[in-house]
Image (tube, rainbow, N blue to C red; front, top):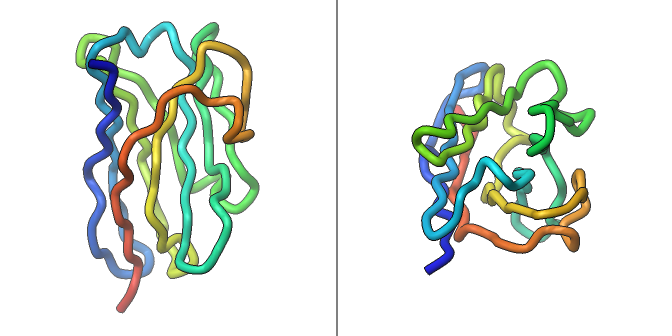
Length: 123
C-alpha cells in the first residue's frame, strides 16, 4: 500500500522549534519531490516548502523563509521539516505530499498525501 505518514506535531511556545517527519511506505520517496502544506482553521490550504528529487534543492514560501528547513534521509525513506522561531501564525495542520513531476507549491500537482499533523504555537 502506498502511504505517507506525518508525525512530530505538537504544542510549542512562540520562538520554539519542532521537527516534522514525513515517512513513506510502499514506494521510494527519494524518486519523488516532496512538499509541505498547511491549513489553518477556516483558511485555504497553502504551500509551505518543497524539496526536489533531482538535485535536492529546496523552495520556501516567503512566510517561512529563513525559519524552516527541509531535508531528506533516504535510508529511512523520510523527509523532514525543521521549524524554528515558530510564530502563532504558523498554527495549522501540516500535510506532506509527493509528486513524480514538478509542482513546487501547487497542491494540484501532487499525487500522494498524508493525513496531517497538528502544530499549535501558543503561550
